[in-house]
Image (cartoon, rainbow, N blue to C red; front, side, top):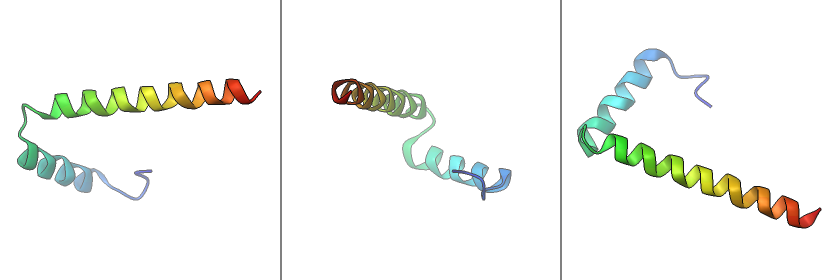
Length: 52
């Protein structure tokens, strides 16, 4: 996914995110994204189990 991005580009993106959301909210946002991905994977797995 990030194969074409170098370290400099990733640092710039992280810096822009920190400016937009503030450094204190970044862990909250990351936690929310993680929970969302976890729930999505769990639902996909349950759908795959049902279809078998």
